Figure 1 (cartoon, one colour):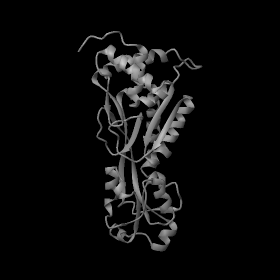
Figure 2: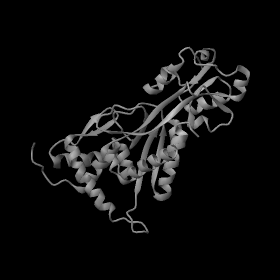
Figure 3: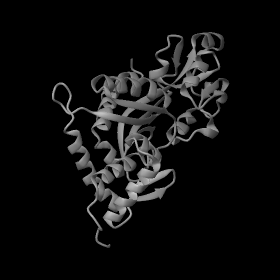
Figure 4: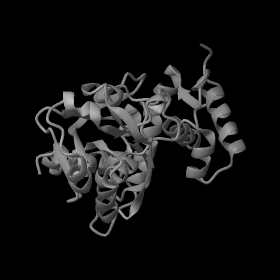
Length: 303
């Protein structure tokens, strides 16, 4: 590898840090208050100084090369040095920045939103953007700092950490069950319609397998959104296979066959190692873990 033509600029290293974390020039430009052209020029200057490519083009964005990951350590040192100059009224280092999080609909509403609010109350300059989506973990986490997915993901150059378990149960509205009766056993479920995900659009293997307990149930109202499942079940569209922590909030829903139909799944947290080292991201992750711990019995349908 040719010798560097000059010493890498601290400003260029900070640009690399932003692109490496977001995976996109445009997102990094917004974060740093620069334009796309300046980001490109800074990266080109850094590559000239380093004597090689620091970023590689991938589907949906950019990923650090081996040389880029070497430069990242220096970039983080520069960032930490700058941040050490900023302290709050108590003399502690102030956290600031945007943390972008993707999670399933129910997790977003009942776990991520309260956790984000707790972070914001403590660190006023940290904002959390929550994208609600039920999907597999991305292979390129462009624009995202944290992903919450159902089931253990297979990811490349990322950390996948188990966050906590939750249960799905079968529910019907009181009015619906009064009219049709409760199922006597799993075999009896064939006479009931099922409210659940749209089979052809479901991307998550563990959620796809969850409905295999009663293959004879015909589809009723289906949706990509679990809040639609809950409301369709409350409106007597059939029996809903619902997260207990969502269904148990509604006194008009009754769980049926709780011993026979109790599907336990796991939420996993996915992030890049370099992203997790950001103090504001670490604060959000800690808040998510605390919220999951506090809600453990609720998530498992025991409260």
